[in-house]
Image (cartoon, rainbow, N blue to C red; front, side, top):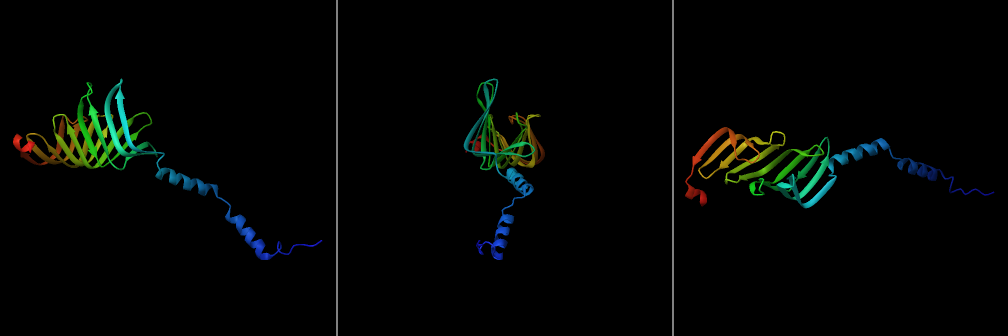
Length: 193
């Protein structure tokens, strides 16, 4: 009986052993890498999205965004990395106010939206034409209030007000600036121009 000496070559045996050792996966390591990626990658992603919020078959708000990414961490998050626009409607389907921002994130508990934060170039215009400008704004579903501790500028037909911090009802028909920094009265003719 003749034995093939190539199979018993010490280099061949060492290389074969290394091959089998290198192919072994540590399941704990694989699971940790997967968990890290799961927190960094969206579970859903959409382009040019439109979301309609309704109650009792009446549209309450319409949200549009160029991109929506949904993440699951401790709570579900909807991230709008390229901005968003939201139009709010009254009971007769008439537009009450509009919000735009360059970035937004919404937090929900699996059944409803609890809180929304918008950042960067935030503008809210109510049905009277009052305009709020800020860099950060938070909406709380439980209190139905919007608030910020950042710089705000409010322009109405009669005046421009600057300040730090604001609390308002969610339709921005009533508001309070926390720390007024300046106020300027304007004539209606100047407002139209």
